[in-house]
Amino acid sequence: MIDLRSDTVTKPTPAMREAMAKAEVGDDVYGEDPTVNRLEEIAAQTMGKEAAVFVPTGTMGNLLAILSHCARGQEVILGDNSHVFYYERGNAAVVGGLPYHIVPNDHFGMIDPQHVINAIRGSDIHLPPTGLLCLENTHNRSGGTVLSVKQVNTLCRVAHERNVPVHMDGARLFNAAVYLGCKVSEIVAELDSVQFCLSKGLGAPVGSMIAGTKDFIAKTRAYRKMLGGGMRQAGVLAAAGLIALTEMPETLHDDHLNARRMAESLNLIPGLNVNMETIQTNIIMVELDQTGPTAAEWLSQLKKAGVLAGAAGQYRVRFVTHHDLNRSDIETALTAIAHLEI
Ligand SMILES: Cc1ncc(COP(=O)(O)O)c(C=O)c1O
Image 1 (cartoon, rainbow, N blue to C red):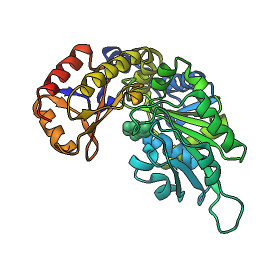
Image 2: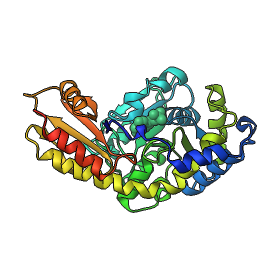
Image 3: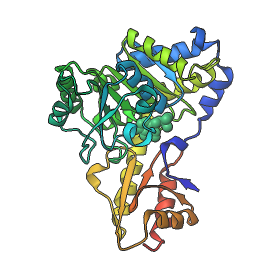
Image 4: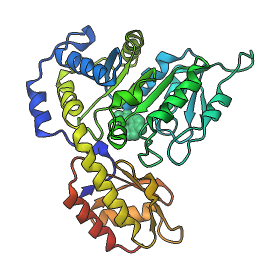
């Protein structure tokens, strides 16, 4: 099977497994795991922030950040196509009593600054106060598209001018940096906090980081404990995370080239349509002709032909390239797909 469902399917590399086996560990809830401590230090330095914390998942990282920025009853401004809104079970609303205020994402995951300004509430007693603006980079449901440093900074400026902090769901932040040809720290410089995943394109088996100020990270640690995310000898996982963070970003460029190659070929198949403008990183969204099979029907044909992908809508299929697939796997998948009826 050639598994293009997600970059979350990547397996730890041999170097990660070796580092995991040899990791020095301690009780991380007591702050005594040297490998976790090193990972947190390097993550903070890489992001250009004061501190960072290791958490089990991106979903938990976003939730802890949102809880730490907001007081119960405050609104969180979010894109209508954002992962936090779409795929995280409404957790900030359920767990934190934090309602979502949805604003439109454009086809590239950008939010119009004027929509943010309009969404930020005044001091009228009837209105829920605004607690946070959340951005996402790269933008999953738009097809891994990238917000530029300028776009991020513009959104930070309009929020900060109104005393609203800004968090970024940077699950694939390193993919954004590779596309922009800049350091991750440049993308997040104006943000109050960022969450990024070690477990996606960077290949670690588990884990995400949140970075921000020291005080903010202390709050996220308290919420992590509250939600049961305080892990003990987590250095076994952090050892793989260290390799993900320091050695794997340079591999993302190949994933992006494979995605472009794949998107160009898929676009030539009658009945399939890819908006090439959105092919910026490692995600390909394919629109199927609505006169042909649905995404579910086409995906089951793909599976029989040895290719796994995911549905992103009734007539929309998502392919994600990643470290465990090389150019020849992509060619094999394309040949199999070209032989299917659509
Ligand atoms: C943009 C984005 N944010 C957050 C997450 C959540 O990460 P996790 O699966 O580690 O909870 C994902 C997962 O796919 C994602 O794509």
